[in-house]
Image 1 (cartoon, rainbow over the protein chains, first blue to last red):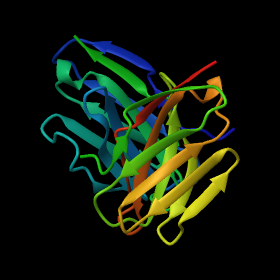
Image 2: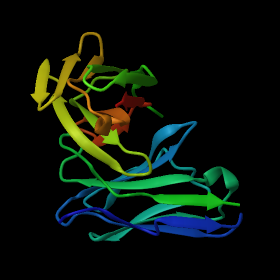
Image 3: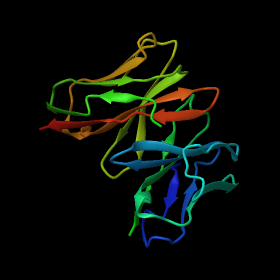
Image 4: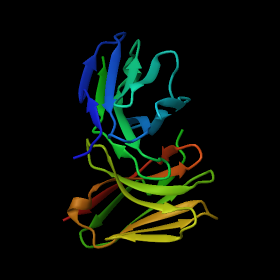
Length: 114
Length: 111
């Protein structure tokens, strides 16, 4: 049963702490997206990768966010230092030829920064 | 930044009725996709329509695309309580691989 796996599912952390979210894309998918979802802003595209190379991370606050794909089976999104305004659900999605075909989403990481 | 705006923001209908959701976008696209999100879950792909297509069907779903007006509609026929969810349109640009989502429509289907 191929699926995108995100860990952790929930994270509560104190302001100023580092947060790392992980994503295992579906095997064989070569495009990976990170989205952030909030009530106010909806689904925002933070960054995306094609064949592990970052194509666009213009949606990400560069001073505190970083996204990497150390290998084809792992994508990470880090926030350092975290702030209360970073509280949101972070989704990873993968696809084989997105935006020409569908994206498969993980269940998300719900981040709360207190 | 979001590419699309959806209308209405929220929709409440009775089971068995039709639900129509609209999406408008700003730039040229290669395709437009519709996704569904149940509360607290990830998004699930419903249907994709390419820029050279005008209408597409999948089960109880019907999608139309008008590239001259930069708009799309999703119609759900014979709605069921289980269709209650948020529905998002997303635009794809083949050259850039980006997938940008609209603001979504919250659909409530009353039993």
